[in-house]
Image 1 (cartoon, helix red, strand yellow):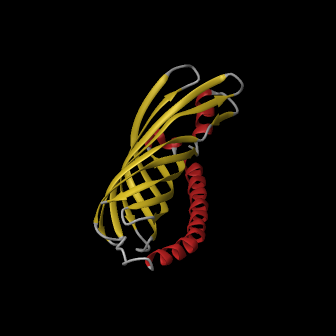
Image 2: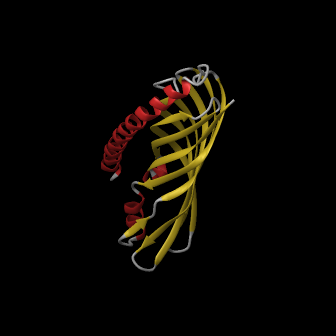
Image 3: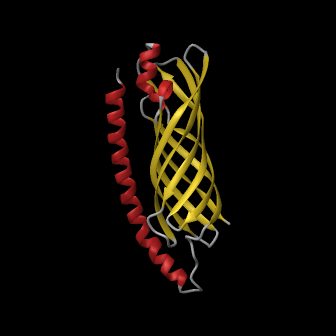
Length: 217
């Protein structure tokens, strides 16, 4: 089976992506930290790592890693191209410690086009619902974090023959990101992650970049 080399390739790509994001976070953190110091001089210190509930919403872009080769194998159609998926993400969580939060997160990727050859057309919808743990590496205005989660992935595939098929499987998610607080209650979030479903959806794994706004109560 091709799962082992595909998994190894996905892990290698994920490591490369995570390394690049850590570099990006570091580059962003320097000017943001300087801005935070300037803002702190204007008033009393704010506890950005306080305990409490939060809500988040935003967008997500994703690149399916193994779907093109999978569809080529199943359909016999060459030169399959799966476009970049765009969707939305929603989250609700609780910061129980200055260095740790837990949340429920929902990601939806809508109507991602699949093209094969010159005439074949199809599309795929997918969503994930996961419980996520987020350890925070810093507790000031700029807060890089790691994340790990598990839950379910659903997908609906409209194939080249016009048939539709749906399936739900267990999935895990790993990633990293950064929250930047613009006020005591509002944070801008950027994140990067890898979603790995299992079973019949193992070829629907994807790398995702998400962005959004978080409200801290």
